[in-house]
Image (cartoon, rainbow, N blue to C red; front, top):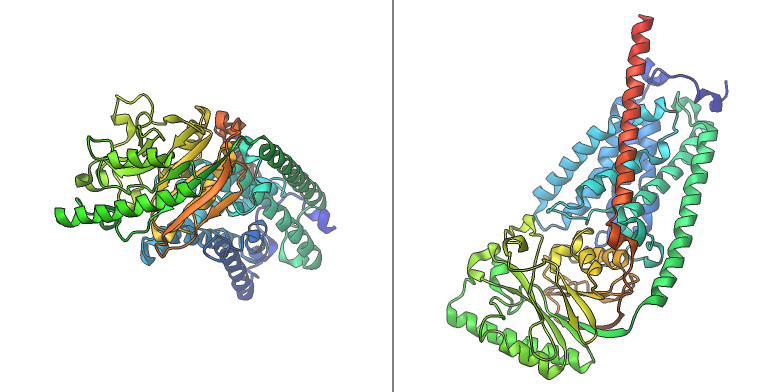
Amino acid sequence: MSVADAGTQPSSGVSENERSGKTSVGRVIAGLALAAVSAVMLFVMWNGRGNLWPLVFVAFVPMYIAQYRLLPRKWSAAALAIAAFGYWLAMWSFGGLGLPVTIGGAIVIAVLWWILGIFERPFTERTRYKWFLVQLPLLWVGVEVLGQANLLTASNYLIAYRLAAAPPVIQPISILSSPALSFLLVMINAAIALLVLTAMDRRWPHLTSFPVPRRTAAWSSAIAAGVTVVWIASSLLIYGQVTAAMGPTVRVASIQPGIEDATPNFLSGTTGTGMRPAENQARRERQQARLIAMTRDAANQGAQLIVWPEEVLDYDPLAEGQGDWIGDLAKSTKTTLVVGYQQDPSMGQRTPNMAATFLPTGEVAGQPYYKVHPVLAHGEDFQTPDRYPQYQTPYPTYLTPFGQLGVIICFDHDFPNSAVRLEAVTGADIIAIPAWDPSAMVPLRWQSLVFRAVENRVPMVKAEQLGDSAIVNANGDVVTRLESSDSEVAVLVGDVDLGPRGAPFSDLAGYPFATLVIAGLIARYGRQIYLARRRDTQATTVD
């Protein structure tokens, strides 16, 4: 019987090596080592942890070899758990939560993937690899789809984000959603792994009693190659079309003032400013002088839109007499200013987190924007817009001399189906983002900016207090950005093109693709349950 034929024979679900107990200690060690290679690759492909993002196309391959050819079946789930540990260790390391929490969080996720992985190899062998190409993609992306709205990590763990440095090849997310790119990346890994497993079956047939059928390997590879070619070709086409369709050029600026005179409340996490009134007033005056100077610098460079960071002010500039100097500054510089502030600092992390927009006339443009998503990991517990019935919408946009402006705050841009999309739908040609990231997150969050810009085809201007201000165009090209955790003081100026908006994702919110993934998961586990019951029925009949 040939290797090709062997893979088509009915199986008992246990390999000959496992039935005879011949799995060697060396093979187990080699399997665990290969799984660790995947973990390392999945770690170092993150920006700030190696930035070897091309590894995303092959990082799971060593894990697959360990899972299906080296480890005994009862240990095979360990390969997936180890790989997931490496990936999530990188994710949690950006939280600035300390080493015990970082490692503990990664271990918790690894255990969950161990449990999920228990069902993978038995299903693959019983179905003779027919589902192999989509098994892990369905599971990995199913987790992404179900978890991307959580208030701990939001969508920052999407594996698709590792391609943020390559905007020309991510454009179909504006139709299908970002998890669709995640699915493609994991599927490419599965296709490569299937070819490697097929080659191993020819060279070392003794490693398994369940070789890959050659026909299955052939059509799986053809499908993966075809989908990849279609994705890349359509992405390049969309990239060209979006670039050509972008509207008038607007010069924008991101003000990054550093933390020398920053609001103490945000940094300390305590209620109030922690300073005597006279000291705090002196700090405010120094901060005001710096903001004025930096804003005038940006205006002198031609900026029409200037964005200040999140909670840069520890008072309400819309209160009578409080923000007159900002209106005067906007009027004298003939610019639109977006200002982040705390409405009531005495409430600590419970204070509403807001942003106001000042027009070149010195007037305030409509209602302020309220931050929608609190960062639970850093203790935010502010009141959200739904507690303010006097406001018509939590996602206002503002008419400015250069176009329709949307404003969101910091963490809000990590939620694909939320603020950016909803403001694009209501007409925003450009999005301003006051933000204040912890220093640990500086290498990470520009990537979700790129994906929000591409998904909705609108440019993004993010102003940071500390170190990762960025300006991104509607096609995902990064115009300019900073990457420093040393409280760099900078005025970031760049040209973006408005719009063009009109992305299918803005209207559909990725629900069609998410529905397909969930349906695929249901079908996959439904099939596994059916096969398990049929096997039990057959065993009972034989008995």
